[in-house]
Length: 187
Image 1 (cartoon, rainbow, N blue to C red):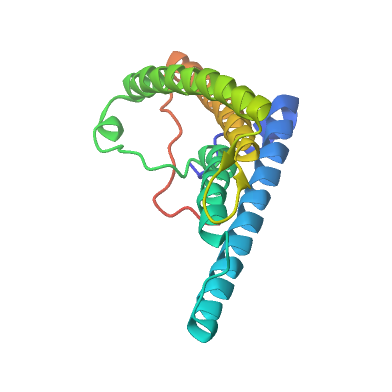
Image 2 (tube, rainbow, N blue to C red):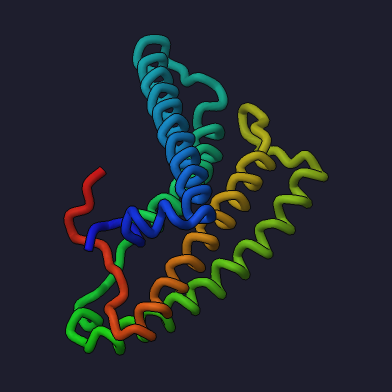
């Protein structure tokens, strides 16, 4: 099976999956844009340091915040593509229905952990927003936007996990193996 979680016909017939695919794609594009900006800022900082002997103020602080944004904007898209690191050595040797059940049980644990993470980070993001939290350094960089992105990324990731869990449970009930990513995922 390909790296996507469902077949194209299943995606086109499910409005929630279509919307989530669009959201995940938009967040992935935002992830790429942030990565490009971070790389360009780093190049500019290194160049200035080489020629002028001093750094551009705030690049390190902004880079730290942008790394968080990059990770959480891309996590749901990676799950949609089944591109997260996984270990399938034992599961592939099980009967399809057993493998699907094992995958679903593991995924249920992941869903519970991500739901808890979403709950905690939402509370923390609200506190950060109310306090107008900044990261102190040479330049004050606001942290609350990154905390909001964490919440957005975890929410999309949780929805993607729940859809995958439903697919795995259906697969286990029908005696089919859970869909896993190929080792050669194309971009």
